[in-house]
Image (cartoon, rainbow, N blue to C red; front, side):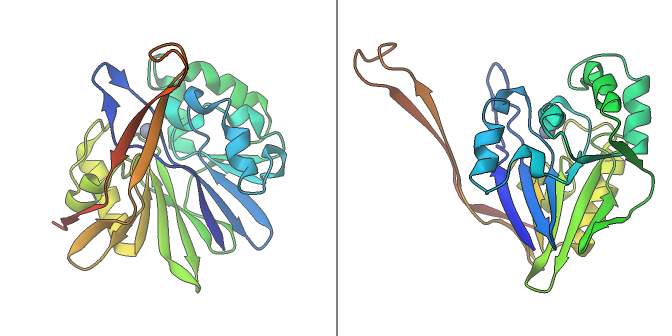
Length: 249
Ligand SMILES: [Zn+2]
């Protein structure tokens, strides 16, 4: 099985508002090409380029897995013209009953239905060899994760915002959740099966018996065009989140 980060989620926000940089993961198993989430509007012009780096085009994706219906995770689904699109039935029900307000982009939902390729999932199921859905509500009522099992790698849960970051996985305490208690139950479920967790807005996380370890650092650069600050050169502002860990509680 191949598991690659198309975009890495970022565990921060601006002092003036959200950045909405979420994880997008490419999974390939026995000829089936799966994309976990599609990022937000901020990545719309970059998602094709990012996929190309993994040797895959939007048309090649067989299964588009939408973890939950928040704006920073589903925005670019229309690019994936051949994919079956999977969403949890409870999430669909919630979106249909919600007012049209951020971060639930209800206005996108009719277009998702109009693809004719939306399949609602109401129980956990294997969607490809070694790739199973795991119902992980809490952040939203119908959130789903994917569990990846392969003899050549540790059992990995791609969690979306069921686990947004290191702190949430280590403590079970979450922020910005539809229901904190339900979120804590979902995190416990993930901790039972996962050796590695790919969260919605943070580095890749390793679970050991006593710690949760962020395995890599994150590095993003804000580029100010030439002439704006410096007459001839671009100005680069570096954003770095270092490796770190927390004890499990
Ligand atoms: Zn998110």
